[in-house]
Each structure stands twice: as C-alpha cells, then as structure tokens.
Image 1: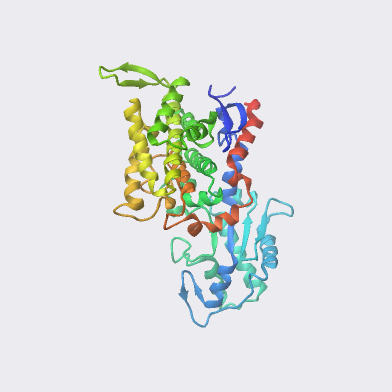
Image 2: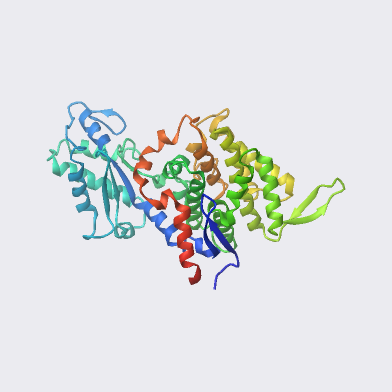
Length: 443
C-alpha cells in the first residue's frame, strides 16, 4: 500500500502527460530509480581538461598560474587523447565490462570519466570520483611519457592543482560538478552546492527541465540532511511533484495562461483560481471590507501549489525581461502579494520571501557580488528555503538573454560538454516520469 493518499499526473515541458494516477511515492528518491541514477551519475562523472593540463605543463604555470621556470614539460596530451583514455580506463575500471565509462570529447581537449559504482561504494565519501580520476590521469601521463622523478611533481600540480596546499583543488584541470565537502554549509549539502548556472548548462537553457533538475537535487539533499523524515517527507515530495515535475500540468498551464500579457499579479490570480477549484483552499471568512481570508486543510499541498506559482511567476516576469536580475525581486514580491491575497503563508512558510530580500542585496544590489546564476542552495543567503527557492532561480537563469556578467557559457561550459549526451540531465522530466509510470503499480 502507498504511504500517502496523494495521486498525481505527471506532465512534460510541453504540457504533454507522461504518466497518469501516479502515487506520490513513485517520485521519491527512495523509490524512483531514475532519480537515484541522476544522483549516482552526479557523484561519479568527472571531466578531464587535457588541453588545460598540456598547457600548464608546457608553460610551467601550474596550480593557479604559479610559474616554475625550468620545469616545463612538452607532451602531446590532446593528440594522444585516445591512448591516454585507454590508460586511464585500465586503472579506473574494476573488472572488464563493468559500468566504467571513459570517453574522449571533441578534438581530445577533454575526456569524460564515469567511475564504476563499485569504486564509489567502496568508500563513504562522494569525492572518490575526483580523487580516483586525478590519480589515474597523473599516473597515465607519468608512465606514458616517462616523466623523470624530479619533474613528476609538475604533473601532479597540473592535474590536482595546489591541493593539499589549498583546501580546494585550486588550479586543477579535473572538474566535478560537486564542490569539495569543506565548502558545504553542513551535513547533506553536497547536492545543494551545485551552482544554478551549471544546471542551466546541463538542460541547455530549458526552463522547465532546469526547474525539474534543480528540484531533484534539492529533494535528494533533503533526504540526505534528514529534512524528509516523518511528516516533512510528504511536504518535500509534493514540492518536487508540483513545482519540479509539473504535476497535474500546474506550472505549464499557469505560464501558458499568463505568458503573453500576464504579470506576477495575474499569475497569483490564476493560482488562486486553480487552488480554489481543486479544493486546496477555501474562504474562511469575509471581512467587512469584502476582503476574503482563506484557509486550508492541507498546508503542505498549499505550499506545493504556491511553489509552482512561484516558478511560473519567475518564468513570466523574467521571460518578458530576458534578464535574470529580476529573479530575487520576483520571488520576494510574488510571495508578499500571495500572502496578502490569500491570508496564507507564502512558499516554504515565509522562508522564500526572506531569501528574496537577501538575494537581491547579494546578487546585484549595493553588495553586487555576482549574478543570480552563481547562487545555489548552499549559499549563506539562499540556503534557508530548502527545496523551493533554487528551482525558481534556475528557471529565471534559463530565460536570461545574456545580461549576466557571469553567464552559464562563461562559468559552466565544461559541464555542458560532460553531461551533454545524458538524457537523465538533459530531459529529467521525461526520465523520472517514465520511471514513475513503470513502478506505480508496484506501490
């Protein structure tokens, strides 16, 4: 028997139904193998910048442009990419024919490695992918080109960067989409520490798919940090369903209805109409002024509807401006207006609204530390609204028309190359929806 009574229909980014009458648990990271695969591939997929390593060795500038004269090494790594890939695979794989992937990209400037599950599960920390690949690349270069022992340290520095002199791998030419654990705000923040721009690159600026992927990362993180336990599990799954996976076509229909001439205010009006029609909210009392105060018997479901409306409002507003700078203010005033219109709490019970204030300041106001594309759920400003804020940020960044100083093309191009052929990251709505349809009767 399903744990929860909720049953949903899942729709894709074109408003087409993928699966009907799906139990809510079918989209749980505990049950849905597609979501589990997304999490696994996120952990195990590593990019090797061969061109970067070759340049670092040739110039002697390693570990973040620390030039060491007389230690230059001129080796044709890009030209020999296929040979190096074979060398790396022989060290990384556990047995012939396992799930190890080593693939040369383009002209050999990059190699993508997916380490086998056996290696990831042999330890307990998610950095295994990075360390295993970095070690294998270092060994492969030293062995293939017979680098003498007094220059071998240059290979290590070109590959690993300045680590362990620095806490992070400063100047490394090996890239993981996950940050080092030392950069995480606390337990369970690894998947929340993926920059919004990275997700934009993975989904090729598709706002619906970007919302879905960010929502999946945020929901998996909720399970990791103990947020999705007991009565809170249903709240996170409902937010993933309606905001991230377009359950009952809610996000799509709100955007379609308001896309041409709508505003944040008209999105709120449409959301209220839908919530009333679906029986999610009802009038509690009408004041002498005529103002209606609403109530609900299901706060988590109302929160999910509100979160879906938040994404729709960002898509409509930022989509019209083609400027992601409006994301934090849209989040802030959508929630402010929604609370005044309904008398009910905004997204994440006020936390999303609060984050909107701080994010406006930090992203491009007086402080102006960076555009919305640089934010993630691990940031000191945006970490508070768990699960429901970053998907809206990603939606807006997907629709940005090139106004940001730090664009996805500038910060995240390598991840578009790395994850470019993986449907789990390019079209997560379809992949997760298909798996939910497959397992719904088993639940």
